[in-house]
Image 1: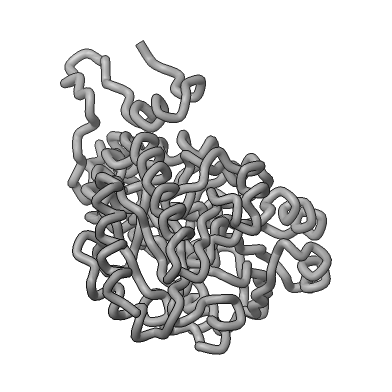
Image 2: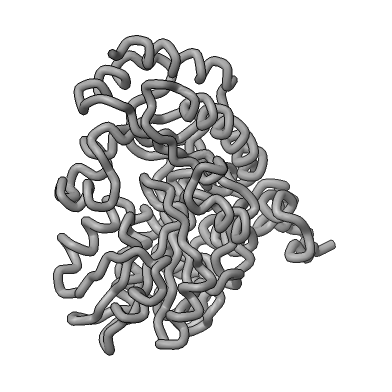
Length: 391
């Protein structure tokens, strides 16, 4: 019996969407869809393929199942899977912009996104502003403006954007609203329900969830936007492999339980750091001290597992602290089951000019943490011994 998974809750959809067992006569009845590794497909004759598939770059049964699952957990019509988050962002830009077009981005965008805008798409005009200043946002719109690019929370300052308010202004001017939903994941935030037109993910992070598979995704419900981005996916070919699609499908099945534990641990870590005398400030949307705590409560169902904190002292103090950690792993990326920690000024945002970093609040001692799902008492003990090692 076929199931309409759209009527079910998030966890049920994350497990069953895209994975309908085959009940047809002669089928094997796999509960988990098989991994299709073929690169090409047979045709009856030059005019008639055996199935909807002809070549793996265009489509693949495993990737299609994964894209169906992605769309189901974001409550949208279409999902497109890419070889990386940057490939997904590139596809959006290729599909929706031309030389001379203008993009307005939130001022604290991920360093890789800014590098893509500033170093690769030099034929585009980019403005970085605080999008919560709606008057400034509207004044920044030009005739050639095409896209508003949002992260919420931002990386690494966890700034929250009022997506609904920005989308209302953007749509009045015919702009496409893109929201990077990597940090909160579809479990805690549904951007299209707030007015976003396109959602982009680095699925390497929470969706994959185990730091072992690279990927990106673009999701939307608009037919025209889908056709444009789909054409770039096929023509440029930065598609996700069948095996990586399989791994991401497996990761999604535990997304809800992982996100709950990430958040639970992040609360404990954030409160511990907020009370420590060697910490200047903690940025975690779940804390009442966060400047946009009420906004994130209003537009999302949770706060996620990402936080940043600023040590008192110098860059050398921050580097010494990180060097003393034994359980937290110093590494870029985020969203895996293990706790990762990094120094944006030297790692993820090293390519952003120091003056720009400082202007938006990324100091030399700002540290970003992806809180994992380990026993939280062990995480606190590791932080404590490392903090004790610095002046």
